Image (tube, rainbow, N blue to C red; front, side, top):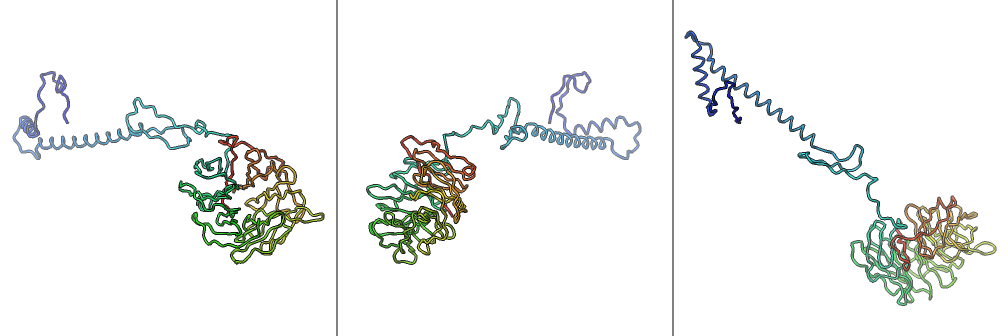
Length: 422
């Protein structure tokens, strides 16, 4: 590497000289200089010129290595100084690393949690999916248009992220059951023109009335499989399941029967004292309402489907409506039903068999109730508002009220979508 000559080279103050000198010429000049300075011609142990040249080479190598080391250290220091980690200590998020010339660079600080924009808040956002008009709004914020679907009375998810089952309200053409695939495809009709439709809580079975027949089938991948059928009296309709058995309500106040479709044959004898059935428990028993006591009145009971809904345990106390609206929590402790007077009641099923404990629980049920996995009951009241019932708060004296739902217009009535149960 060459350098720029100074005006006074070699500090002699004399005229400048060129630097185009080769290594051989330098060796020759050094030898001539040493030879001229020797006073006597005695032989030398070593060539002074060669020694000077070797020393010069060693010094040059040391200087080269020292320069490289200093350059490497400077590079590390510059890189370290230029690497800037955005945000103060303890800040959440991924730091921004900037490598390069820091001159004129002002890294943008990462937004703090307090500065992050809050999501748009409506009056209420449901923990479960909702059907509002002709669209499905999931709890995760997704919206699906329900083409050619409606009016909707109830809906529930299919297990294993298998989509949704949607049941229409009663129309002059009967009821329709749709399956909405999870992949974005439009709804598909599973049943049309049915007199009544009942879907199991786990979403794996469907029962329906079609003319003089009662039918039931399994549901896999949006397809009805293993369909069975039987004849039934006029007006008898399926209302639910207890395992593989179909619970059938007789017309009027005629009671309930059980159709064990796996065994074939006709439904069993009618249990005329059974006024309503709600949900089945894991042990196979059904929570229902029976006419009992003296004088006769509606009382809660555990019913045995294997014995044509014979009561196993009965508990009376609160005045209960016989409209059949109600549902059991996932932990099987609570039952939300309508009272005989205005308003819903929260019943502690642990007190069944003695004097039943019930607590006022806000507006009356209109279209049934859905329980979340977190133990919150949700339903839509007569005004179209969403009611949340948290048992611990109700027991402590809270009276739930209805709240308007974000995105619902006054002429729309939301439908709470039931989540699947194990």
